[in-house]
Image (tube, rainbow, N blue to C red; front, side):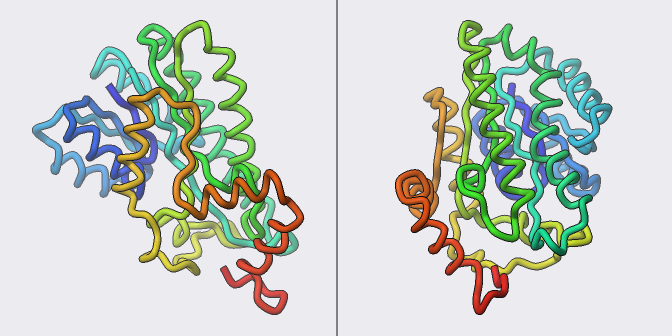
Length: 261
């Protein structure tokens, strides 16, 4: 039985479909009621459960967890996928941008994992956190997003050791640039969706391909999955050549002193 947060788009939606097609029972949550309704119609003949929930709200997480356990009785895999990005310079961004980003990306994962934990321990399950290369390397214009993913990475490392004797696997996934709506829904300086992406989405790994890598890593009970050649190169360079990486990152994101990506 698999629970996936943020299953109405991008990687989350691809994971929902992939696990259902492979015979798993799947529960998901999201804020888009219309999309969840459409998914319910699509998968009406499959063991699929969905709930409208905002993972930044503890009561919403409780509703999702309680109804999922009532529906399926247990959970074997939790994929903390729900997330939001941002695109704003520190000097321009309202404090709400950082609060909202951290609430969804970090606290949402904490809430769901805590609430599902006893069932995961009982079934020697797997906890997955969908993080980002930004959790290894801070990115300009995404300082709040990077902070939330750094927090997620550190928290996952810590609970991995805490749950060692319980045989619960903890997997950190850093997809790299993946084609999805996360950039068009990123928060601007006023904590509103930007509505556009500054990146070449068509050149990125698809969400479906990313989902397959994640499923394989779960089956092999890996601890870390870093995807795309750009992602792997960035993590390597940042670890061994941080000053050079500073220059490369600035060159990529800025043009004549202006944030362009």
